[in-house]
Image (cartoon, rainbow, N blue to C red; front, side, top):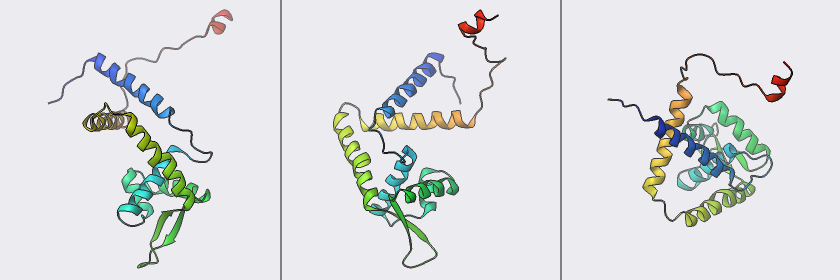
Length: 168
């Protein structure tokens, strides 16, 4: 059974999303040529290197739930700035794997490990359960908003700037 949320709850959720964007904007600025998407790929490569084996492009695409061509583009960008490298798998030379370079490890250590450790020490009054609930809620909201087009009645109002009114 589905239920309709009160409009005030939706407003509260959207305001929180605006605040979340402001939180992201407070993160340390990335070096030129590095995007948040690139950083996420670096983090997954580091994670898979540490917990399993160096990943393939398809492993990263699966983790991020994006297309392989999209990840291939990000991998090429990261390779061009020398933070990752490709190499052939030892058992099957047809398989191409990814690993961080020394520069990639330094970037990961600074922007992920060090920053996340600092932030974890600052946020002592939010439970892990609250964090998981917040993340799940934002993910559900994003999935809903990105897959359903709103059906609004009529046309969006047109805003006239004061200069345009004076010219009439």
